[in-house]
Length: 424
Length: 162
Image 1: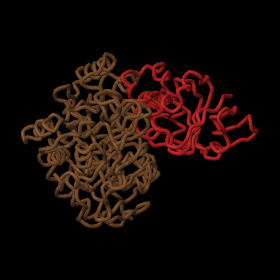
Image 2: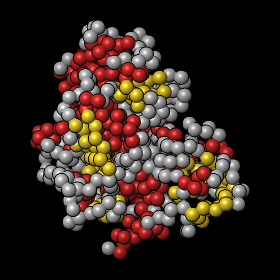
Image 3: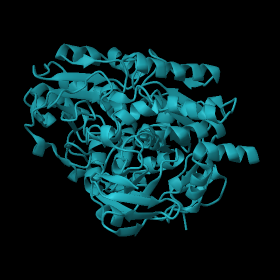
Image 4: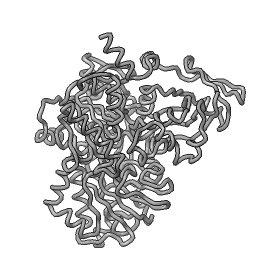
């Protein structure tokens, strides 16, 4: 009886030949991640352990991205705590304002996370790194503290759900965001609770890394412990330019046991919109047509990568943001921002009337830079549309991909991108 | 014994403690804003020993440990829900915030009922209605964690004995 890629990574890091779902194991970690919201709590817990040194200064990543550049004195104090800890322990993977990016865009880009890794992060979207063929999962600050101290964490080996995408043809503008929203719409926000979600099939192999990272990013929105994609040529090409240490490629055995297999045809999947207040409330973009919006947010750890900015710039090129819309664009990292500048995309965005920001998580979680007032509505490429997520508890967030967001910013209401591109 | 505060399904971490308050992490600060976007009266009126009741997938969303910390700091003795999101479940155990999984109890409890819980035996009593329920017991490893008082004392102990 074979193992899934998730089981193989967990077994290897636990130092055993085989693991089975339900088993509780202790495993060695390759990377322990935390941000400016979760690290201060983790540092406090770490200090309670009375340990002088972290387990390995090269295996810890501290990314102050949520309330940075610091939005107020309290967040500045939190970031200072993280900065001082990083300096004291000579943490290798630490970046500060001007160099920092949104953690889940930054870590893959900088080659910090690699195929075959076992990663915990005190951020629920740590599951993003599954796109590289790593087993990566979100934890809280206390787990992070114990991880920084010992280099280990306990895991319950999850059952795996397999999502097979047949076909390599997609409807126009459909990308990773639509595939994952479609899945969440089918199985619900707890449909993969405690499970690993393995995405596979020709449809996945046809996706770029940026699109795969988007898909795995939102595994948590179905309750998943991890989202994971077996490395292929596209993965290895992406990693080759970035890896500064060894890594290992794991693949699921043909006779691996899955709890459930879901099969989809890529051609059947239209552009998706998740209605308030859960990512599972998905409809096709045509069903959402005409919904008036006040703000459009393009960016975040879900859709702030280069391809997301490329499609945004393509759609905005030569057009104007609707006068009733505030369109905010958040590149994922400084490198992405710089590349977008070099390619002229930032100029296009600004000429269209969009506000372009330094990388920050700010608006995605209602932190800063784009908070909604009572009764306001945002269309956003971020990952969550919970009550009060982007501001006032009586505001609303709709989720979509960057093409839909950019086209809707021009029209002042939710539209299919073809309305802007074909008629433009 | 404490009063039940009942909420619905998919109570997410943004509702438990909105991100706009995460620029600080003192327990009393978090407690003052606990559940604010679902019930603005909760933080002011919850009494030490009260219980929070949730539907399925309680604690979904963010990994923020601030969520169980806020509930604990608000004085809530235990959360009883139909099911929990994974990270919240783990975080609650790690910080020693008692949580019980029992769909039958959730169905049999209304807001305002007087509830008694026996954490050792995972039993729940609805004193107001005269009913009792058996929650899912914790697996042995979790019991060990709880016995140690959470993950930090557990790790401390393990290191001492290593």
